[in-house]
Image 1 (tube, rainbow, N blue to C red):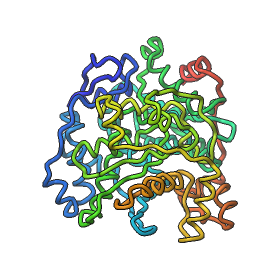
Image 2 (image 1 turned 180 degrees about the vertical axis):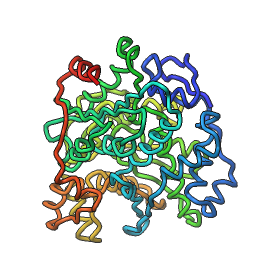
Image 3 (image 1 turned 45 degrees about the vertical axis):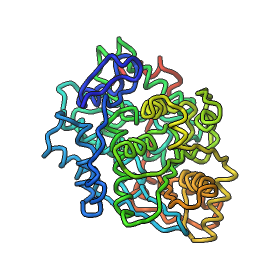
Image 4 (image 1 turned 60 degrees about the horizontal axis):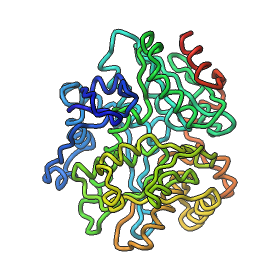
Length: 430
């Protein structure tokens, strides 16, 4: 398997090089040069396979010869050591819970897979892993890379209350090889700093930089596993399936669309967003116009210029009509989010986090016009991460899991920066 840059299509590299580089030399995102559909018999027999077996068969063509079979299977076992429950919420609607990993967020799978891949490659020169986060990515990456030899992780996150208190503690209390930088700005500013670093010739001569955001293929592609694992539980269903995915940087839904391209029988994907509605507007106008992100209670989706959308258009060969046939996108504001959290809690006692709430809203909107389908929406983070907003809404306390409670007594440590110049100055100090 070779990967091309979506900026120029000139550079072709193997999986190992793509992972270590993070971004292509021309600043473009890497994308598989070809994708081979899986055997129909594999899909039909998913219910007879373990999650490990499914993940191996799904990812092996993308890894190619960069990791041998035995080691790849070991990496997968280290990645998928928790459950992905599929919960019945109401008629024709199920919840896929992705928050049962160590940092209580869906990003645990991709972060662990990437960390184990980099550890396997074990380059002689120390790897500096850069990650921009709007909340959950940084925590998952910190956990996945903590004390991994030969790596140092720099987490950039927006200040000014744009991540929750629990999320900030997950980012700033690790110590060791994990360094947090609070950026005076929004997530898009953090992401811009990371992308600028990869095109800084001077910096790259001195340091071995890689990315742990979903721009990195080893963080992005393992998210395919969720969809195959969920479908494993639904192989006997007679109804066609649609997924609603809370979407910020669009890596998760992009991985789902790759799963579809591999042959997973999903009828449609819904990209559910908050008021940062760059993609819903694109679907209406056919024009991609990025805008400054706005702060919401669903902070992981506060992205005005989602990096992975260029990969989605590549999947559909830049054919807007083909994309519309397989994907929809809707946006919802905080008022709608809070209302549906309360409504669902009153109806079923199920507690949605703000991102899952938007996934649910997108699914309901789609199913109103397409009631014959079975809908699944993704719960991407444990509601305790957003306890202030949720407890005010539902009027009761959320039990704090043990994974979180030990952080509350730790001291937060971070470096405050304002721009790329300050970031570079701090980075060279390390």
